[in-house]
Length: 193
Image 1 (spheres, rainbow, N blue to C red):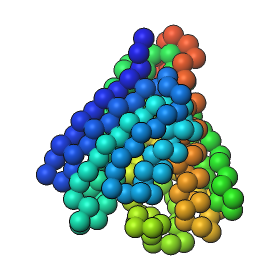
Image 2 (image 1 turned 90 degrees about the horizontal axis):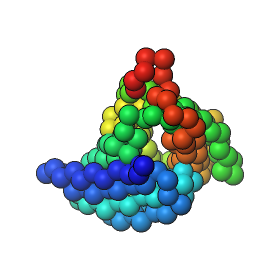
Image 3 (image 1 turned 120 degrees about the vertical axis):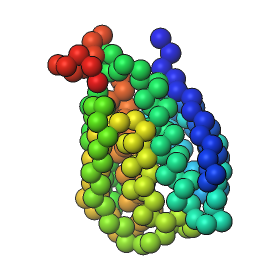
Image 4 (image 1 turned 60 degrees about the vertical axis):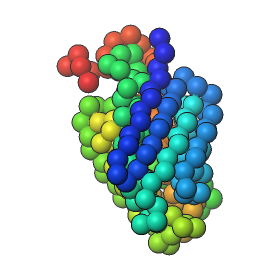
């Protein structure tokens, strides 16, 4: 059974096409106007083992907010599409990932309930031309689109680039664990997620 997702979203603010394969090799092909964001999406693909293709453009003359948030929503919807009824998946995932002085912890649950708990303070307001506050907006979008429960904690971090990259890597590792097939049943006592 193929576990793939493909979503296209076109609004007055953004145009995004995203496809993914949960059973990939961690290959990423990403094209957005935001260089640091591209780097984070490539990191996500590599460390999750998911093949991810993203092409996104938008009203970046304003800022990257709509582009980043909408890409998160589209990624979440593609994850939900690829998982279907979630039969056989591990459902839960967690990771604790260091990157130099930074340390990030992520736990997630494909619960069918959209909930983000985000606790991170970044030393700098920007990494390159990327506003660090957009990290939370991206993951809020992922949560909305996928209806997952997601907890993110930045435990240490003196360098904003390292801190954000640790978060993306921890999310990727938790995602890899949660989408792994480990049985044949829907992983819920309710029989539905």
